[in-house]
Image 1 (cartoon, rainbow, N blue to C red):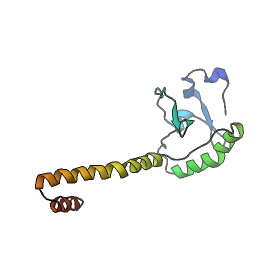
Image 2: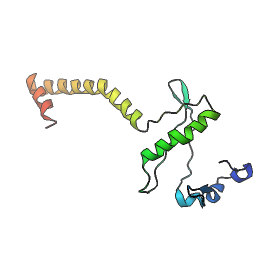
Image 3: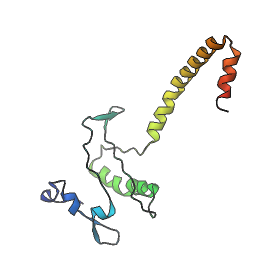
Image 4: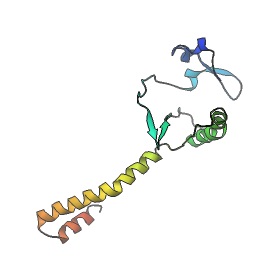
Length: 141
């Protein structure tokens, strides 16, 4: 749904925005969602050579709807409509998984390097090669 230009010319129009519910009634946006107006990033982000727009949201305390249900609705209802109008748009449903993968990817190299530096430091301190190894193995326990 898109409002007329006069009804969407001001950020204050969000308070009066009416949203259609599945039952057909219209309720004000502020009854079903809370929002905070903040200044967005002024940089253009890129992912694998493509311009990227990240959309994030928090679920309002509603026990009947889960994040999985919302993601399924976005995939099956909202995105096909967007793809039909803008065929060059691609969607990626990653959430925090991409950031976690980047973290673990960098930990492979950096983590082993740090562990080696810790071993060398302890080896110089104890003047032994076996004691630092036993100490490092003991740390998780």
